[in-house]
Length: 79
Image (cartoon, rainbow, N blue to C red; front, side):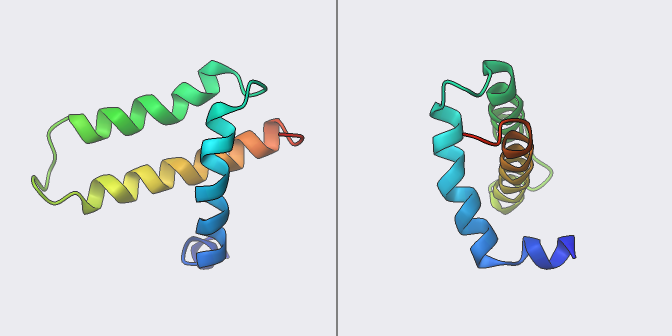
């Protein structure tokens, strides 16, 4: 069931709408926000296995966004 959700356009539109709201929300602790931003930036900056092909960087960032939104909505349901 989880794989089907990852391919859903409805799911990803929800993720892309929620990430900016959650990152700018004052109800989400800074540490939780850093759990998305720091690994994503580190993955984009550190040397790649496939240099000059950012597809793997985008995929990892999208999976981090999915994890962040799911975690934030579960921990802080009113945001």
